[in-house]
Image (cartoon, rainbow, N blue to C red; front, top):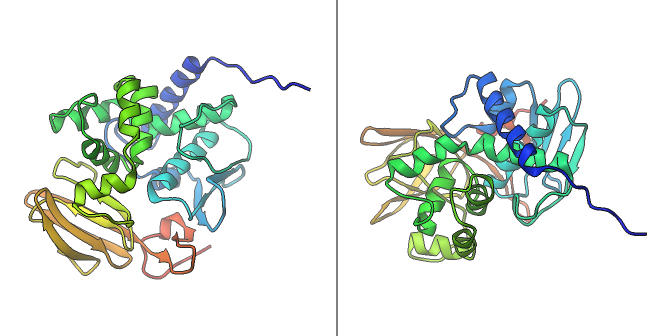
Length: 298
């Protein structure tokens, strides 16, 4: 028996998702340009978020309160995107759902309109078009001519993955040609880190420059952070590694919240712990407690 693929108006649903993302930011009294903490947004909306040792992208559990369960096994940027996706299910009043593992956020078009709606909502909620335009303009970059490390820098500012930003710029916003997006997608994370740092490493990397506007930066223990030249740390949460031509490299050493300053620029780095078991995975527990040195739970 042949199965029939679901057909739906993707453009109409994308417009609906963009409007819902804008309204959700406004409801939480967030601006329509800057990066957001998706976990803080969920808390404001009364949605409980928890990280679990589960082999899936995430799960939305409808109820009072509504709950989002995220896999602690996924990379930090993917967890944030998955959280925004599950929040989309909540905003649109969908029932409980489980999202299985995927190669990359939005890499394959959804055949289910609810999943497409939630995924597109996540893109617009985390990466609003006005904010992305500002991020490129203030650095005097353009999406079409940006280098891989420039794209990666902006992805880090909005807390998403390199590939996720490329897909959103190309398929979601038409700010980047499909041909250029495909070329940039061929750059592997390993090669990208090697190009930025001048050496190969398997450790996660976050880049933050003085144009970054968000007051906070989320990281995990053992994450490498490339911060602006002259960056100084208050506390012992970040350990200096070396100076590079483009900034100072640090390693996140312990859980907690630590301030970084570089001239007039400042940010609070919020570091979450990681599990030491094999295979390695991140913090397990309620999202609101992820930066505390001692875990608190329900």
